Length: 70
Image 1: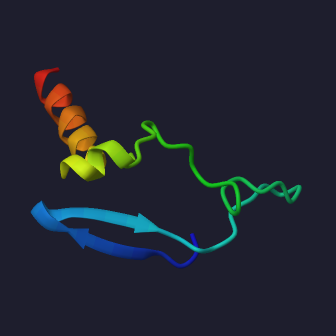
Image 2 (image 1 turned 180 degrees about the horizontal axis):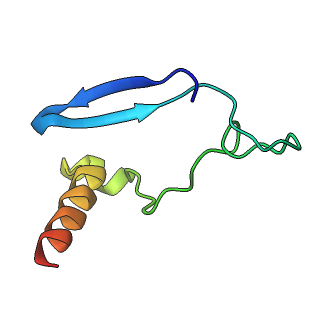
């Protein structure tokens, strides 16, 4: 399985990741240097920074609220 790194976040959320190369027998890279495409792309804008808003946190809260409704 390779070497894993674990980070425990608040509320007992565990995040695991590896720096090990992951590929197929043919040598195709599956994750290493490819990354994982995010479900949501959010970044700060000049306008929201000026307003003191945090777009990343706001989107995270929105996603969590939507998941709670399901």
